[in-house]
Structures are given as structure tokens and as C-alpha cells.
Image (cartoon, rainbow, N blue to C red; front, side, top):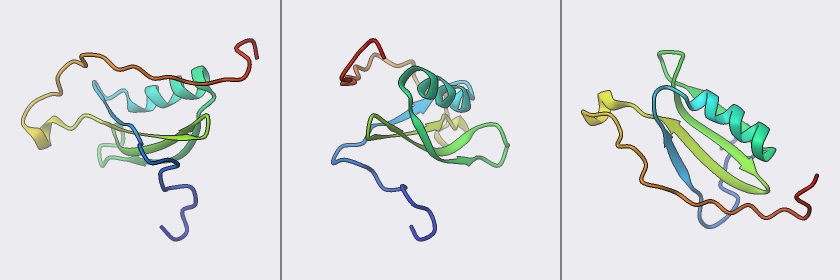
Length: 94
């Protein structure tokens, strides 16, 4: 992607999560505060609220996300059944 550095995934497996209830921007803020994520890009939807796509880097790894768009699938997304994420840090106190 010419002119947009850091847009490619950083590893062989990249999680891409869907966010319910138009809370994609809020999720980004959470990952930045909780995990020190870096926001690489954000592509807002036409409604100016939801995100079509966002790319974060957390501890050197990519995390992609987008808001739910029930108008394209015919229904709201199902509640998550669970996910486990492991974050390796050198020192948990800093």
C-alpha cells in the first residue's frame, strides 16, 4: 500500500475482531490504554461513527478490527463465546 506505511500484518497469523454496538473507536482507546497499542490506521464508515477497518500494533503484533455492520449480513453479530489472548511482557510492573 503505497503511501501508507505499517499497513501489512506483522506476523503470519493476525486476529481480526468484530466489535458490537458501534464501539470500535472505544475498543481502540481500550487497547491503547490497557496494552500500550499503537494505532496504525483507522477507516471510518460513511455514518462517521462505525469503523470499516482499524489496524493496531500490540507488543509488535498486528490486531485488526471493525465494527459490526448488520445491514450487510441481515442480523446483528452473535455474542462472543470467548477468546484468549496472550501478551508477553518482560516486566509486569512497568
